[in-house]
Length: 68
Image 1: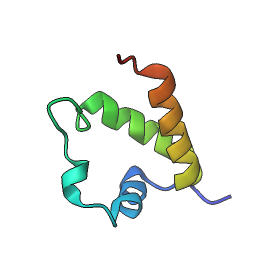
Image 2: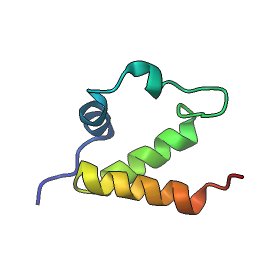
Image 3: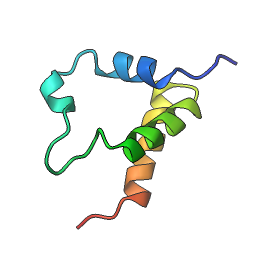
Image 4: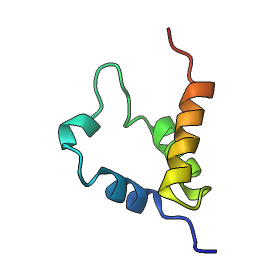
């Protein structure tokens, strides 16, 4: 079984076709917060493919982040 991709590899491969403006943190989205980055890294390193990492990230947001 191949090793999971690093976070940098996953993010680079997954965002190549996106306009960088959509990836920046905003006043309401703290995507550069250390706790968020650590969670992304932990989930990315524990899943073997970008697809399963994406599902894990979706599940985490759906199940762990409270919002109104």
